[in-house]
Length: 406
Image (cartoon, rainbow, N blue to C red; front, side):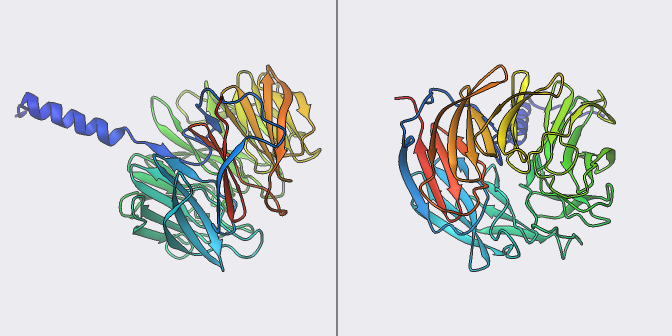
């Protein structure tokens, strides 16, 4: 016999359900992991020496990870004397707390790799050595940790684990890359294993996963070294794979999904590719491929009918027509990271130049640029934009610039 639910209890239950399902996620490359920040009233040009520097925080350690910003807090990871740390700052650059994340990657390009993921007061961090750690975002206390090498039988790669943790509902997804534990879903509250997927039994790559939501299922899309794979987010079942033709392992850019199509760009695989995803999510069909485009790890953005990215050879930025896959325009401004906000592209090159670029139906115009005032080694970090502030990280320094329209 069905029991009757009193109206007041029903309302309370529905309110609780909405609260549980309506997660606030702050993560790598913005809310949707697509490099697009929904900002407004930003400057359309900068002074010759760049926008106003608000403040800089030094001593955050070596690393290439981006900060995440939520409310009045800024979180970023770094490595000091081989030990990783998670730092919490306020929006004036004052350190609130820091906590260790364990031994960090020290073999090459030393320092932290992965950008933290913040979900409803909990921070999820992945280190180059394979530690997945959950912190209380308010006070930095560790809630749980999992070692992908020891606990999940993972196999690390030549530049260290680099994916930003993907969180959806009550699960956090990671890619140990072991022959039997290619992808794993953990309970995000206690770190317990929910499912394990062998997938292709392939080593992991360096990209942060994408979550696609269809009417019939949710799909995790990410790279292993030799495949782009689609996995059922609730069960771990391998739905499909798209082999990578290159012999090297630099698959480091998060894919993008829109209107039934998956776009990806790799540094040493197939180049730029457009795939059609079937309505049920069970298969993909290649629409076009352009092997002349090679973006190692700077990410790409899609706006309108064009993708904007950078090229490894020759070193420049370019636009790609998503209908044909052909290069529409190019910009000689070295190569590097790229994000988008308020109708403008923000380019952060590997040589430390920052450019404000106006896109116009595939055309690219460099409007303003300035040189970062710190550092000489490689500039690999993806920029972040939040509430009219541009966050740029180089090594152990985080700089913030006021880009609001005056």
